[in-house]
Length: 430
Image (cartoon, rainbow, N blue to C red; front, top):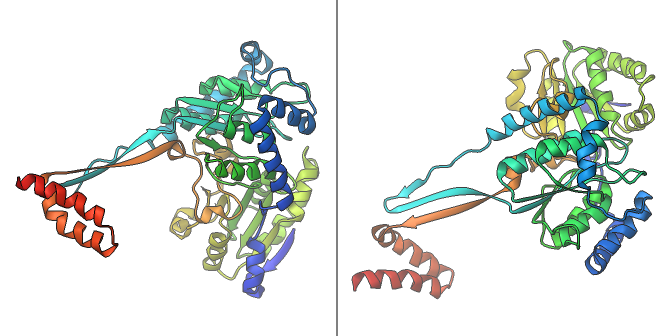
């Protein structure tokens, strides 16, 4: 891992360190455009063609059958089922608390406004299949969608070479209450959800992580009038540590993120030169016997350490980087919480590993990456609802507000607006 000193970095150097994972690639966008055009014209036939090309498997039917669902639990251990059920319970508990009713606001006498939630009617969830099995992502997406009350929830997962989806993913879908599961991955899955085919319903919103092809396709979906959660890139973690931290634990946190894939990023920011040096040694040691060592080594080669003069600079950089995951290996980490302005999810102290949020602490692990945490939040109940505003004016309330309304209508040159007010006042006078 590369190493830098904060005070020696120019503004341009800092900006370069914070820049990562561009999605906009003309060639990739053109390919995705072709896939969308084909799916629009040919529906399931096009989906099948691209599944054969990209996933190397020919499927007579992309939808998971009842038989596949019913036999899924036989393919995993009872221990795994119980772990998924416990994670699901914690995720449900945390997200259910987000069901907040906003009462009406009396703006002024006779003018009452309020806001109500309505579930998005149909949503498409995407769970990557690539080089890992991710039943936890099914829970993270499906549970808040169900709590929100979405009428139709569809799940797309890339098929394996044997034409099936892992039993773990199907069991997670059952726990979540999702019955419409499709063996489709990549850009063709996003196109199918955005446009609809003979088999896959067209949805109103697409949610979930994926590689650059998936994220580019999600941008295409927006052009088709379909909402998305965010354009998320490869996973990342940033650790802020002082000299009270354990190098062993920090190294384990960095590696746990790096093993996701070669384009993952693991960053350590510390005031202590000794901590940086010891962590470097621990990382080198811990990665040796890692089953996914090749992925981790590639990711660590693109990751880095930064030594900072003080915690003020540490949080200045952390907020600028806006990491997906932020871990505070600090003495009394709670006193630094107010310094965090931009991060997807934050983990406080030595007993809060990022893996807890990945699986079962209850918070959502579908989070903004690539600096999007400066403006985006992670997936939550709000991801699956629309917020509709209402207002009710009494006759007296409208009469009191009328001069303001008419003045502003005239200011903007919209005579019809002013007439809509005056017509009501005239009706009352009559």
